[in-house]
Length: 387
Image (tube, rainbow, N blue to C red; front, side, top):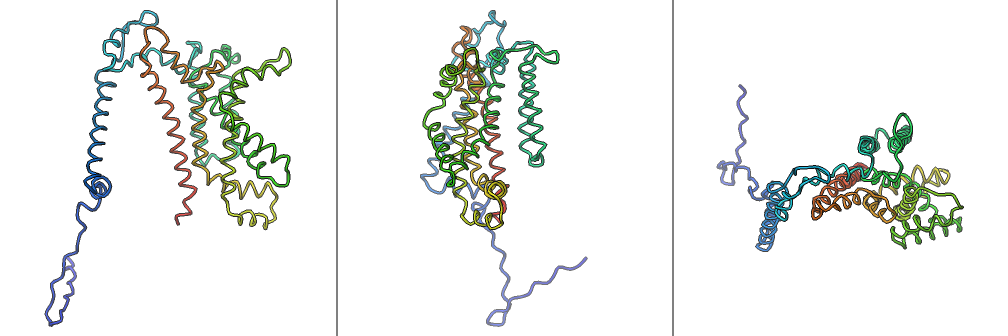
């Protein structure tokens, strides 16, 4: 074996060797998890008191939720339909949750009044939507083929929901409801509102075409100056009055157009903020290369502007996903409204918390996925800035 290297002795001023000092180590309470806790939660007596008080309330709340949602909860009740017996749920009301409501009504909450025997079709539609989102989120699929995938997926969704072909029974739009309606309104809203918002934002910044700029300004300020409910009301009640006699447009399509116009106005202002945040040198460099307006915008200006405004863009998408619940005003039952309708029956009245928690969990999954993806995308796009 090779002997360890001899340590070099340090000679003092008197010519005698000085013993080597042991390497100093940081105190255990100053590094790692304990160090972080001490620096952020227990750095003073006031912070310690606040931390302990909040910990007490959080533990108490968690124990109460566990007792209400799991330990004392009722998971099943006898009977079905009109013959169901909910006396067990009412016996523990206030002390335990009645999850039997979800077991009995989950198909109505998710799919509305869609024919019971055909509910595999809207279930497959939800799966197609989720798969479409996953594929669209992967950067290796960001090419021209992705547009064809969207066309094929949306065509399959229309065939499944309406039917009438390939041996599928026809289902009128009035029977649609629940989660598929929410996904249809939000997905089509984002897909069409985003490109429209880009055109409107570019039009508002035009100085060479005053008429286009004025039209875009009027559109943005008019739409952003009224609530979405008013647009849905206009689309449902007022718009049919201006159509020729005998002509009618489906109310789901009218609601979809109102949501697209509303979302595009807000997205246009977000994109305009990104365009204004770019340094003037980027525009001048693109012009120095001899690029046309659309080449300069599509290859240089717009990609940088969109990268700067990823957080507010996704915030608008999330808000639009949740705002689809307002379509109740025109008689369309989305996910939230089917949950509200599921507790109208006398047997289930008083158990709305369970229904709303079930729907909230679904909304949370979709909204959290959008938020987390936007954070990862922003981190990836801004990686070069940390070098």
